[in-house]
Image 1 (cartoon, helix red, strand yellow):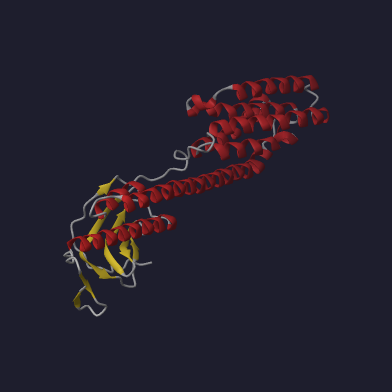
Image 2 (cartoon, rainbow, N blue to C red):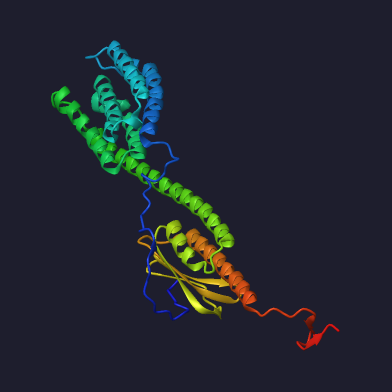
Length: 337
């Protein structure tokens, strides 16, 4: 919707509330489990699946240069390290330490492929869930580091462990697709976190709006508009001003407008068919549809409060009728005698 200012008001912009602060999907979702804890749980589940699969299938995959006992020792070591990783309180450690989890998994997979055919090992497919797990829980740059670590591990196997005789065909064919899986997991997780953050933010602001509506209805101040500006700026995290009209005006067809890509709202402070002023909100990020509706509810509550207080003020200024004198329905004063 293009911005249409229904009321030609040219007044200085008075700033209330607090500066606009953008929500961050990775930092503002307090109710969501810490990604580091989720990464550790995912690694434990992956180990619980990988160990029995390898134990049941490795007999036919071990090369002549190696023995099944080496695979068994590798599985035992991987199980012990996985249990130890599951016991570590990752949420109390620096975030960078969580890179140890995919590091251990990459070391296990490259060791397993070295024992079971190198580049031709069917266990090369284990890189896919490792990268998907990293893509879901880790930051973008750490996901890229995990992908590069996978390529480095396979190159080390082919050119160092196998003396340059190892195959890198799966590295050049399968790894790009595994990297794409990691990227898709990362984007999906990011969008999911942003959606949950938006839902929780709207829940919080809905509760704050309802509290503000009750406060406006019960406030004893003669003019609720200054309190409206302060409250709106606090709830919606931006700058707000409430412009009061000297006299209420009939409402037009436009009671809501937005501009600047949805980063500025202009709403009527109205009650019924009478407009008492304008509420303007502005911040650096666009207002969502839910936020615009909540701002409209808040402005409407302020308009109703202003209407009630204006009516009470008119009744207080009206001269008292002398005792024994009433008014007829035609407006003619008559005596009670």
